[in-house]
Image (cartoon, rainbow, N blue to C red; front, side):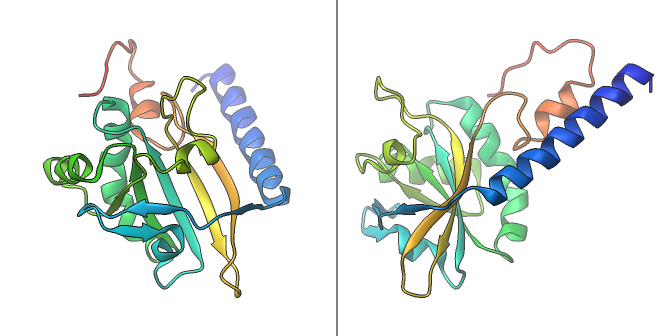
Length: 181
């Protein structure tokens, strides 16, 4: 490895450590108990998604029209069992329940999927643009002993981020002219 690459990797590592500390120091945001929908269309509330845990990760997914969002979700199939040992884990699709159910089946996702279609949840979490289009990302929540919910952190998804192992691995190749399907 050349010295320039080694120095840049150290800078990135140091910046990530500072980012982790800043996230830990940030004040949690109170969140309402949003109504969402199971894939059969029945209602489910955000508080129900915690399961037996007091922490929850919710992936904000743009839906089946976004091949990038599907790529991230495909990777979570391998990670979800690990997440579930620590916290609740769910993908919240912007698609209606029946569409999200079909995508989950077609892609063989092995984690819980709900629909936030029409709920206002994505917008309230900052994952809907001013033009109404959804944006991808993840939010972390904590449930208090009294049942209250706070968001303890969140991060957007995008090509090259740390939430999809495909990008840093492909960055090792000389050219990057690939798009997910």
